[in-house]
Image 1 (cartoon, rainbow, N blue to C red):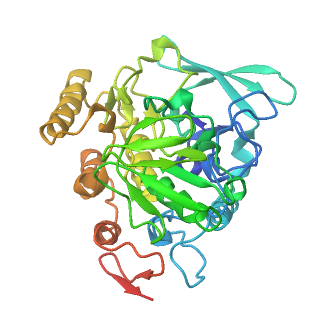
Image 2 (cartoon, helix red, strand yellow):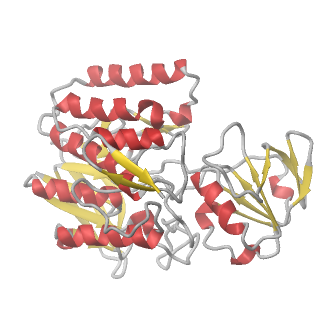
Length: 409
């Protein structure tokens, strides 16, 4: 089977490795000149040298919010360096070693911009791509497509009242690169997910004052000197007014408000619709039920990224051996059951693809059992669930066997 893989980041590399191992003719199309996807750091923001939106949201000083033991490909551990929470260059180097070890580079076309993906009447796919240096456009025919473009390149915009009146510097974290512009400034970070907490930590080392604004939850404890604030009610020319009535003078704002799914290269015939960040309709958050030889890898969030794409890829490759095993009606019934369960727990629509610790183990095991493939090792879930109660970046972890791990300083 000829399989197209869109993107050569964490998901794309794993898709290429498993596809080739199973004897498929796989080609990965990567818009950048290197592998790594969002793990590639670039000083550029907004638009790249080819006039395309910059894909990477990477910034200087980033450290992983999960231990490296949860960011490994199956049977390919990191080099032992004595720490578990590692930096962006270390993750990227690991991915390069993975690509070399499995001889993936010959199967990757770099600097390829996907213009269009269109289903054909014979259940094949036409892919139109542009080589960015020559601007030459080429069309290809494939039997299946795996979309592995990641979720961290199209910012979710904020609609805080008064935002347009603010006269200071305001950016989304997608365009944050380093703390240099914030020396001596009063900085407001809006959003307390992994990036918000990490950027607040980094900016606090150089800024006069850092405030972090969030609703009911914070990803993990921010630095002690970062001032915690409730949601922003309104912005003025140089202040932020918070829901508790307090007001602070602000020089710069960094919006850490997340991202939205975006697939501008999919034609309407692909049958994909995005409704308030719900990608409709994907069986098990992977299979396009309108055209089941198209799979979306890695769109789920609040997960262990590398083990997640591993099980999703193995699921999809097994699924496409017999796409008629489930009817479209059966797959839709399964989707609506999952959506209903989320509604019962008052989860908003834009969290349809959120897995989180509550559903992590159940989701992984369901994928494996549905198509009769090997389950992810229980130790992955055990460690991930353990981190819900204790996330200390100074701790180190060691996986002992399929069930147990060690924790130490």
